[in-house]
Image: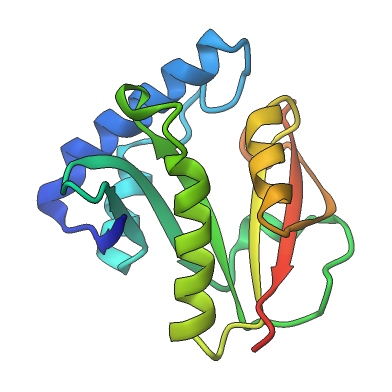
Length: 174
């Protein structure tokens, strides 16, 4: 698996992957991503800031996308909970999606393993990795905790007024 930084030429491909992810969530009855988040402006900003990444399989096919956002992430300003450590040396994994054409092949687990390893090895300044997901997204919650993250709290109304998200953190050991 390869994780490569996205360029503006990749915008439409990322948007298609995220639309597919939105559809997968809707089919599961999960209200996550059913509004205006994430939208084209979010992804353009991620690309401009160097936060957007494409995920490629070992046979060089693009299978997914994600963003690794640098601190500070103001979505977490109103955390109802407590961080594992109080630091500004963190990154946040956002907008993770594996295209449905590649679902069920273990790519999401591989993605988490690779991203965590990359951050631990190449970002020795980073003390913790943060992530959140919709309260009804049980598959993502399982994937997050399976990869060593601890639930640290909740967000209320950050992405949409009546939406709750569970927040997780992982210490990098750096």
